[in-house]
Length: 97
Image (cartoon, rainbow, N blue to C red; front, top):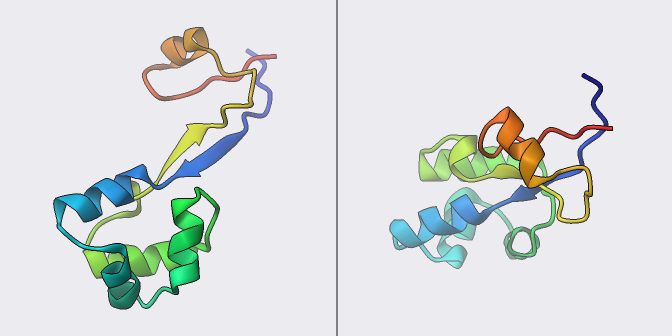
């Protein structure tokens, strides 16, 4: 079955939920993980950050990468449909030509 490139983006929703659950403020995360406020701002806007930063955050929160980030289909990608998601299983996009 031919595939075409799926445009994916990073979502940090899991991180924000984890912070709420643990009652940690973003400024505290910045301090604990030794991450600049500008990086936290980039993340809150859904922008990409360096993997090293994510590892520092995971280390500070004693969690794994999958606990704070996930890849989600880019809303502008017409190749991802509800039908293609169902074919591959929940949450796994299949981009067909």
